[in-house]
Image (cartoon, rainbow, N blue to C red):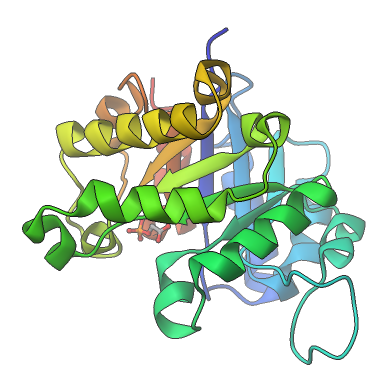
Length: 249
Ligand code: PGA
């Protein structure tokens, strides 16, 4: 069975609640496309108004982070049940910005992965190499490590529903998209890694996105690759361009 494409916007730390609603209203008609999954991953404080604004549309709402405990003395964190109760169905985990600025590690990402599955939230687990790692030729070793640790203890049935976003750090927010060949090569490598951990059926089911300066011009060729099942889009998800990315065909 062909994998359904998933195109997600990662708003990062942009848009106040009222600006968020205005952006949803602008994008709603532009992102209409029943052939793909469309997800808006938004700042925590925007989740409730965005879920409300997306009612009756094809847009699903995601969070940009989540904690791995149920509740308790974790000042400033957001629990999985808070997200599901608010209408969230996806969560971005282990984005490189969280790894770089907020001490996120593959071990904490793994704990969050397990929690997300437990609560029926689909994780979009990010991985990707630095420019230095690419130049040193250790891209695939590094990413395999991120994937293997991230998926520790995740069952094959859970893994089948997961989304993995391959985001080379040097391509994020730089306007420098990886070439189609580079993106396809790593996404295929990630799929092989999933086949090694689980089996072919799991590898065939898991959805792998490319992220890093995706725009309306680069999306069609990227999304046409055999192992690229959509994109995680930062900058261009805040603009009308996102409609063109979602309707890339
Ligand atoms: P970008 O961000 O599209 O602005 O490069 C992608 C991401 O960080 O998810």
